[in-house]
Each structure stands twice: as C-alpha cells, then as structure tokens.
Figure (cartoon, rainbow, N blue to C red):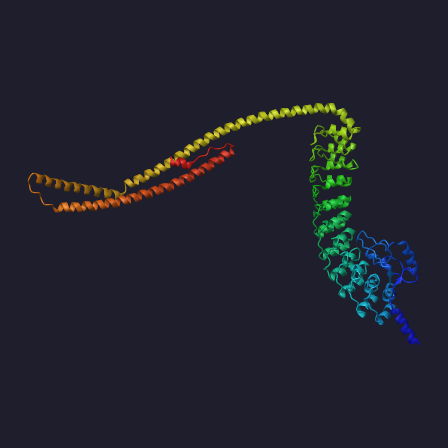
Length: 639
C-alpha cells in the first residue's frame, strides 16, 4: 500500500499541468511570473481571471529583466518592443513549476521519473532557460549533467539559457553554461547576444566570464547596430568598458545605420572619465564623425554636457568641425541656447572661428537670432563676431533677426554697429524688412530715429564709392599706359633680337659655304688633275700642230712626214687624261654633294638654335604681358 502511494505521487508529479480555459475558475498558476515577468510571487487563477477581464489581449509572455518592463505593458525603450502573446490557454509542466519556485527536491524527483527536461511550457520556454535566469546552480547542474538538457536550445524570441542567465546577471550560471558549451555568439530575435544583455550590469565577473572564456561576441552588434561597447559607454559603466577594450573591443566601431560610436555615446551622456579612458587608453578617434558628420563634440553640445565638452577640447577635439550641413559646434551651441557651451567654445580664442559659414552661408551669429535667449548673441557680439556677413540670400544677421521677429536680437545688432545699408537678394534692406516684420517694435523706433542719418550716410558712402571707382578708373588708365609703353619696348626688343638672330644664322651659313668652297679650291687631288689636264692639253696642241704642219706640207707638194711615235703617245696620254678628268669630275661632284649634305645639317642645327631663341624670346614676352610676333626661322633660312 505504501509502495502504491509513492508510485501515485510520482505519477501525479510527472503529469504536466493541463491547459485550461482561463475563464473556468480552476485554481492554477498562469505561467512564469517571478523575476522573468517582473512579479514578486506566483499568481493564482483567481488573480489571472480578474486581470484577464481588464486586458484586451490576455496571456503571459516571457519578459522580465530581459525587457526591463512590466509584464502587461511589455515595453522597453532600450531593447525594443515585441508583440504580446495572444494564447487563450496557458499551462506549465510540472518540472517548470518546480523550477520556478526553486523546489530542488521536486525537480530531482521529477527527473528520477524521467520527465522530458527539454519540454517547453505554454510560452515556449525550456526548463533550463528558466533555471538559468533563476540562477539556482543545483537545479542547473541536475538538468545539464543528469538530465542532459540541451544547452543551446532556444526558447521563444530566440532566448537561450545563456542569454537568460546573462540578462538576469547570474554570473555563476553564465560561467558554468559557457564551460558546458553554450554558444556566446547566439542572438535572440532582437539580435542581442548574452554579452549585450549582461553589459548593463556592473558585474566584472559576469562580463569576464562572457569575454575571457570566449570573446567571439565582443564586437557583435544587435539588430539596432550597437555593440556591447556602445551600450556600456551609454550607461556609464567604466569597469565594463575597460574589460571590453582590454579584450579587443573595437573602440572606433560605428553603428551602420547612424554612425554612432562609443565615444559619441559617452559624450552625449557626459561621462568625462569614460571619454578620457576611451581616448587616452583605448586610442579612440576624438574627431570620429557619425553618418551626419557630427563628431563627439556635437553630442556633448547637443545635450549641454559642459564637463564632457571641456574634456573633449582638452583631448584635441576640433572645435571648428563641420557636419554634413556645414554646421559647426559653435553654431549648434548657439541654436540650442546652450550659453555655457558657447562660453566654453569662445574661450578658445586662438582656434575658434567665429565667422565660419554653413552651406547656406549662415554664421553662428545668424543662428543666435533663433535662440530663445539673448545670451548666445551677446556672447558672440562681445567676442567681436562679424555683424555684416550675409548668407546665400544676402541676409545679414540683423536682417535674419528682423525676419525671425526677434526684436531684442535685431536691436542688439543695430546698437553695436550693424550695417543698415546692405540689400539682400530680394532688393530689401533693414528698413523695408522692419516695416514688413517688426512694424511696431523697439528696432523700428530706433531705425526711425536713425533713418535720416542713415540715408545721409548712405549717400556719403555712395559718393565715396563713386570716387573710389573714378580713382580706380584713373589708376587703370595709368596702368594701361605703362603696359602699352612696356609692350612697345618689348616689341622693339623682340624685333632687334629677331634681326640679330637672322643675321647670326645667315653669317653662320655663309661662313660654312665659304669654308667648303675654300676646301674645294685647295683640294690636292683637284690640283693634280688640273695639272695633268693642262699637260694633256699641251700635248694635244703639239700633236695638232704637227698634224697641221703635215697637212700644210701636203698642200705645198711636199711629202707628209710619217706620224711619229710621239703623236701616238700624245693621243694615248690624252685619252688617259680625259678618263682621269671624268673620274675627278665624279669625285668632285660627290664631294660637292657631301658638302651640301653637311651644309643642310648645319642649317637644321641653325633652325633648332633659332627655335630655342624664339622660345626664350616668347617666354620673355609672356612675362611682360606682350604678345610677341611670330618668327619663322625656316623662311629666313630659305631666303
């Protein structure tokens, strides 16, 4: 009988709590409340039914510290929103119920009865996930070592036991699960790893367990694009930041969607110690911009974090940085009416640019007219910012103040000497704009009193400008005369240089030809041939004389003398001389052709020299702003 009672107890304990209609009134526990759902104690069915009547969408879901929000509201500005559960029937297994109330003996009994340690409850949560969040190490070890629970089994929304333990700050449970093979890189439906949840706790041991045992998730961003370092910097958890940086976190990582960096997050929150550590130890880029071009100094100014602003400036932040719209930190501080930030920036007199213009041509003084307080404008005027720089539409700061109906700022600029005669692109001046936007104002009264004086001043200014124009015209005429004189001198110089160059080229060519002619006259071969020709001519004449004498004798009746051997020799010699003369003629022609080729090469050299001379002359002319005459040296040589 006793044995039967024990079996009956085990059987009842092993049976899961059946799903029941929430309106039946049966007493049951509606789900996992406790730490996960932000409840102090389990609820009874009666409580659940009463709450059900007031909720448009009944049912429990897995939230708790993972979402940092009350169960029935289920909202979180940090981790985002998830759709609420809509189940009409809710239930838990006996094992889950025992784990929720940390009943170790009951868990052990159920495991002896071979219950399924991986069976999920109505919300899709595994027993190990609940145990990890509760942090009961005895139950966790029983489930893992005795029950062989699946370490990386994901529950609803992709939450694993490791994520649940990290989100609850259970450092011992986290370390144990990692040693047993828990995957630190697994993400839930929001893209968050266990490290991203744990980073919100100031628990060095918890962070160390997640990093030192396996640091693969140290730079993994969530679906929002933020890494653990960005969240730690945003929350001001310096110890966590130090652990992350020491173990290889990327300090200059930027959110792909916004460009937000850890340093920008720390600057926005005003954590000066964090800023110093990230820049000095982490070597973060103090001027790293986001996708809008805003550097960390913009974030400090945006949230009026004066200490952070001073720290960034001391670390070398560029106070004249410009975002994608051309806006500077001074412009932003002025438009946000952060007078303290304006004062801090203006103290940097050596580096601050008071008159920097954005892409629309507006200066910080123009931005000041849109501030609710007159303080920033007064600070800029005291720092001697230019009152008369016009924007792209021709509006000066005083015009912008009038159009913005900022009577105090407009009056401040008028009293400090703003130019009242300037006209914008619409053809309007300070007086016409005042009549349109501030007809009954202090500025209008002051301008009315000054109108006559201003008009007289405007006429004087106009006359002065006219006189300046005439003086400029006279100066221009004088300069033109000087230029003309220089031009004439330069032309004469160029002409003389041209003639000199022509004469030099001609003399050089003539000298070359004379030299070649002289060389031909003194050629030994020609002289020898000439002598031979003369000897042959003499012999020929002697032979002719002898023939003539014979013919005369014949006609006179005398017998003609027999041709002598001398005549034959003379004839042969004459033929030899003719051939030599022909050969000499050919050789002479070749030498003459060679001389012509040499002369041609020298003429080419002369042309090149003339071209170089022309280039040099042209360079001189260009320097004197006078257009030189073109010199064609080839034509000169052809002459």
